[in-house]
Image 1 (cartoon, rainbow, N blue to C red):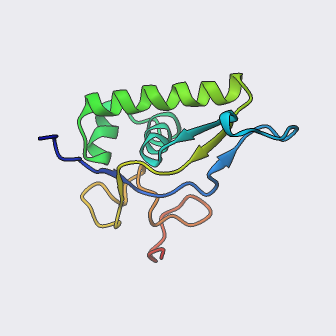
Image 2 (image 1 turned 90 degrees about the vertical axis):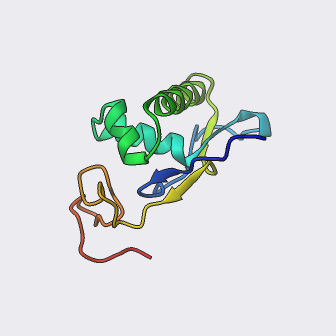
Length: 125
């Protein structure tokens, strides 16, 4: 019997989920799909400056899992950039944060942020 899926906690979805070359029409084989949980590891580690250990606590998964997700996400970004492929961010094994967890409200959680990057008191729908 397979091991049950451990859902990864993600604090927000990307504002834009499609990136790629602007100067050419792309064929189906010229797309790279990055999952939401891969996006979250890139956001936490590269943008927020988290260590893999801190990222694992934020996402509620093992550090070794974060390491694997992060490595795969970086390969996908490199493939997109080097080979002029479009990057699509969608899918994955994640649950969207409700903003009330023990780590929510700290710098890594964006569930309640307004456009300035400051935390907002209102909950997004």
